Each structure stands twice: as structure tokens, then as C-alpha cells.
Amino acid sequence: MLGELDIIKRVLSNKKYFFLFLISSLITFSVFYFLTLYAVTDKSLWIFIEMNGYNYTFFSFLFMAIIALLLGIYASLFVFKIKLINKGKLIGLSGIFGLIAGIFSSGCPMCGSVIFALLGMPLALFFLPFKGLELRVLALLISAFSVYFLARSLRKCNLKRIKKIGG
Image 1 (cartoon, rainbow, N blue to C red):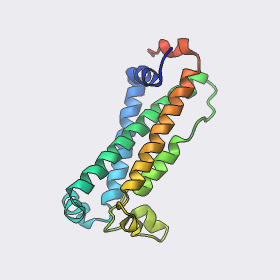
Image 2: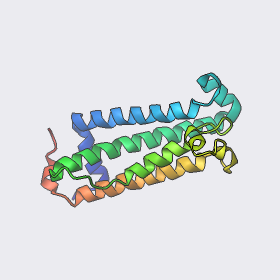
Image 3: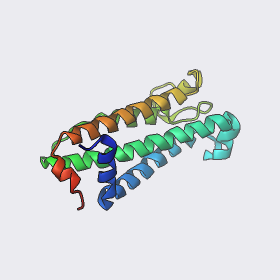
Image 4: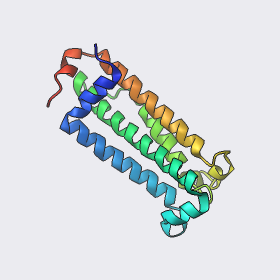
């Protein structure tokens, strides 16, 4: 019987789904990067580091990269599952919650978050105990659970079709 990681590996071994994973991860990370540096002077990463410190910047971008990778995996699995059941109806949209949490966590705690600013709370990240890193961890957990449950639901599908992924 295939485990969740085996299913993810098999789906991503197909070039079409790997390309979808790669493109969606890069786009997601680019959006997070843009939203994080949007309010920083000159949109400069170096000014962001000076304002927030190396540790915060490292963990902030590490979490954003992991979230983007998880959302890329989720997108590939989601498209694969839609094609597998061949009905075209939308199923399992829980990965969207990870994306939303990731977008809300993107921003500079000192300059303000673009999304929170639209809600009238531009310095919301500044007042959180870990300057928004807790929102990134929440987004990471939601995304990881979404990928896990989607892979688990694929395991319950027709295993013969999953085993012979190739085109």
C-alpha cells in the first residue's frame, strides 16, 4: 500500500505535475517576497535585515519558502486528484487557508503589512510577540496538514491509476 509520501513522490515524478509544483511555488514565494518588502524603504532586503535582524529575516524567509513549497505540492496534488476522479468538481480547498494565512503573515513588522493595512491595522505584526513569525508557523502547519490530508484522500482513490502515473 502506498503511503502519503510515496503518493507525493509519484505525482511529482511526472514532469507535468512537477512543472506545476515548481511554477506555483515560485509564484507564491514571489508574492510573499513582494508583500514582505512592499512597505520597506526602496523595497530593499538589506534595509529589512537592518530593521529586523538576521535571525528574524532568516526564519521569516525560510518559513515563507517552506509554505510556498507546500502550496506548490498541494496545487499539484489538487490538479492530479481532479484529473483522477475526472469529474472536474472542486474538492478539498483547505490548502487555500494556508495561502491566506501566509499572505497575512507577509509583511515587515516595522513598516507594516500590506494586507493588514487594507484592514486598517498596518502595524498588526509589530504587536505580535514574535513579529508575525507565529502566523508563518500557523500557515506552515495548515499547509502541511492540507497536503497530508489531500495525499491521504488520494491513497483511498484507485491505487492502480496512481501507481502507473506517467502521462
